Length: 225
Ligand SMILES: Nc1ncnc2c1ncn2[C@@H]1O[C@H](COP(=O)(O)OP(=O)(O)O)[C@@H](O)[C@H]1O
Ligand SMILES: [Mg+2]
Image (cartoon, rainbow, N blue to C red):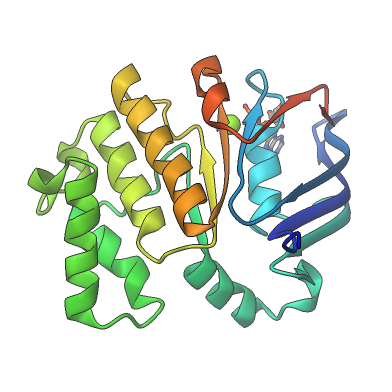
């Protein structure tokens, strides 16, 4: 039996009001992603990929249309429930990393597990395991300002995976990484989707990711195809 979509968009439009004109970034988008799927979203810069992902994650509202997450329409969740849901079931890897500057790599990862009340010893061991897996255990006690872009990106990815999220949303996760590192990350995400039945949606410019994706979508002129 086919599993329920983890996330679904129905007729989603997004328009930004500019000073004297409006930009229609998303035009009547329908989308769904199921457990175990890795979906790749390609599109030129400025085509609305980041906007699409933030709407999918409920971080910004569409101008019109429906956004469903884990079987319910977003508007039917209370803000508190939505926040809990995001903390426990959603991993977001932002294009700009969003690491907390005052915390070390280890602490950045531990923080997201605090939101789900993970026992501290289990959390520390999980965080170290992730840092090891991404080849950055040496950054355990390092602060973001001392890290390269590629290092920050790997910490951000480790953090997004800390809570065993069901849906992982990754905005150009390989953008700041050297080619082989980028491919390693994609391979790891693809294994995660297959072995642990997670749903992963990622955006990229890199055509070499195509073979790892179950589905490839193109966003252009506000239309998904
Ligand atoms: N908050 C905003 N206000 C106004 N315009 C925005 C906003 N966010 C994005 N845009 C515009 O929407 C379009 C798509 O942006 P974005 O989703 O970042 O594209 P991509 O991630 O594909 O590069 C761009 O033209 C951008 O300038
Ligand atoms: Mg973007």
